[in-house]
Image 1 (cartoon, rainbow, N blue to C red):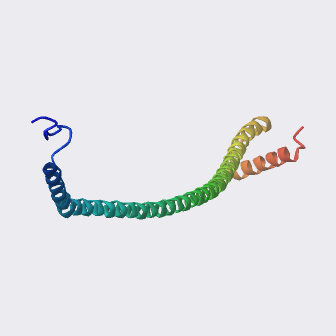
Image 2: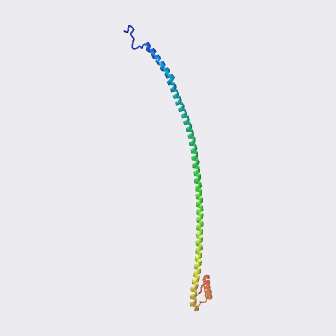
Image 3: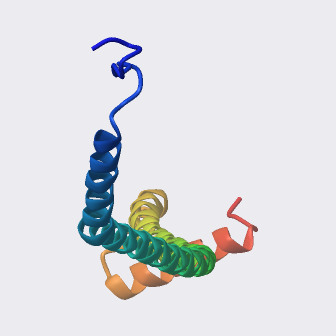
Length: 175
């Protein structure tokens, strides 16, 4: 077949191929539209609702987290104020305890000093009494030697000692 006798041009398709291609395309289009597209749309709708739900849940969780954070910050602030108040009370109690201990220490010191003074006074009285007795014995012995008589009589000895000590205390002394 020649081109002049009705030969077919290879660049132009046969009309039956065009019709057959259109029919197959229409069937495929109908099958895709009927079976594939609804599945895609359902999947897209599910994903869209899941994403929107997830965003809503995330916004809710974020709002809850912000509220929880604000509550925790408030509790932290209250705890700091409470800690400051407790520290101040502890300082005041410490100062009161120190003042009380100082007062107790001063009272104890005064008591010890008073006891020491009383003890010193008692020892001084004991020493004076002891010295009087010894001075009396020495004076009696000395007086006995000087006078030449014996002062063995206790009443006489006591009178001599008392008179001698009285003269010593008065400051007149014996010449």
